[in-house]
Image (cartoon, rainbow, N blue to C red):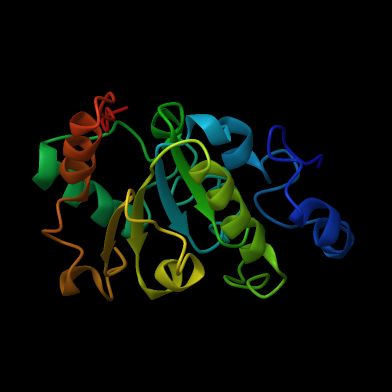
Length: 210
């Protein structure tokens, strides 16, 4: 569980990570090999879109270290199913599996505000200080270029409060959870709006199908 390059210089890794690391139990999810998967896959200078989740799925074998994403063989969780419904309605895209790694390879930072969880106990590590890493990572990515933010739900909006700048795109809606998706998530067309924004800047759009 080595701090990932080129994010290792963030103050979190010297001021918070040593103590947090020592608290992690042997059975935490998504496991040591996937703990920093989001940061390992997306460098600050390559980040173009930020989607912030809450914490990994608490069912063993489901989380792959990327926010909202699951391992390829896992049935779609309800929130991800709603995300794919909106994606289909927005641009007609239907990814083959719930593994969102293809988005990450195009500069979409799929970061959770807490990177660890206990099996069967959603939110177990939500107050361990992980949210500081989320804010520091986003601020580091902002040093390189404007970002598009997809802030789904009050938690994401609160965690990254005051970070988006005038040059960034912010799409803040209800969470895609079945409890709230019909209160502003459905019909928000976030995927086409991001691609329109990227294209207007002369950047390549995201292939949301993978």
